[in-house]
Length: 334
Image (cartoon, helix red, strand yellow):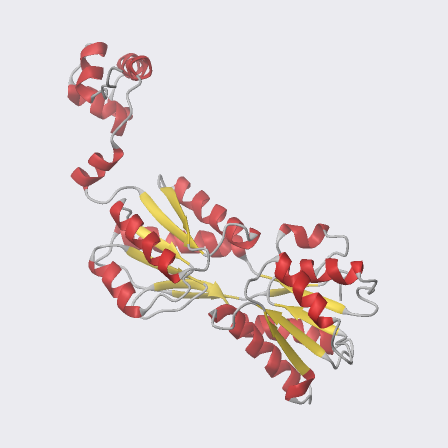
């Protein structure tokens, strides 16, 4: 089989009858090239099947117009929505996104960061599982802008919602409807944002004069709908049953409600449920979900703006820690 030959910028120039510099201008500064010449070069690019070697270009020019995005899971619509908002802001500024998912694995999170550095990205937006300050310092030392999503850190930009008040909002909504046996269903409490939501719920229960035993906690290995269904099965073994359930995200809540309804439990007349995030599915569920809305579009947009600001002028950039307020969205599940 005959080996494929990569088409070079010089091949395009010869085919179009122009200089290599003109082809370069068409690719990078098309406004400098007359329209007729630009169209001729673009036609040659199409006919020859020329593909720009982006990696080589970035190595010549320094870091490229790409930002890395690392999230725990793309299966969770919350992270997908946040990421889409971040990518839209990048695209508006001429940048592209390079996506990685850690899948809840610290080892994979490290591999993601190594991979993004190898791709010569200008910066990284990351919702870390456990990104230590040494790793942040290391990334910065090699010239990358770093923005933490839903985290705070020393010497780095961050953006997130205030989860303790968010957890308190959910618990107070249940407490305000005279629920006194509460259950908090969560993923691993080692995950900072859900631990803060738990802290907020505990504080709200104490403020209402309840003892610590009034709030039971189920810690699930994952924050998925399947984990929510498993939590519902476990819930149904309790005696007495809780009357109000706060789930650390909407996927847990939707899975839990699905299993309760299948077991013949009426939601919300027998058990009320509140979620967290306000993903699109929350409003369209069989029992529309009362939840705490995170401003995920704002989170993604602001994170990108912070990264681009540091990329554009790292010497004069001031790191910012942006904290947004969550909002209770009342529907029919509580």
